[in-house]
Amino acid sequence: QVQLVESGGGLVQPGGSLRLSCAASGNIFKISTMGWYRQAPGKQRELVATISNSGSTNYADSVKGRFAISRDTAKNTVYLQMNSLKPEDKANYYCYMTVQRMGVAGFYGHWGKGTQVTVSS
Image 1 (tube, rainbow, N blue to C red):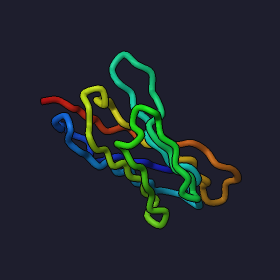
Image 2: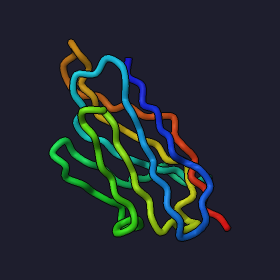
Image 3: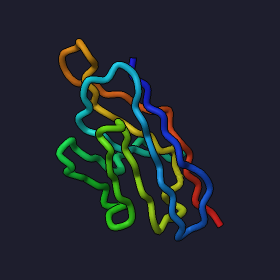
Image 4: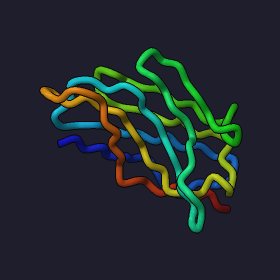
């Protein structure tokens, strides 16, 4: 089994910052892509940012220049530094990782349960 646990969400004023973390644990051999998605009430889940195992990053246009994704491969952890937060960034943020489990061929996607981010004055 593989578990992903997010942390770092909360309430912040517009213009503020938050740093999200997501740590994977369990029967892990290797992790390929790590990423963050978000889902606001009444909307579909959308990509925020991804980072490959070589460090290549990809961002949604709405967060470019404000958010930064990074990873600590040794700790099976991905981070999302969110700066200049806007009310429209309010959502439940989910981490996602493609994981190869020990003794299992291939990579499979795993989701965390999410952490809430609220941006309000």
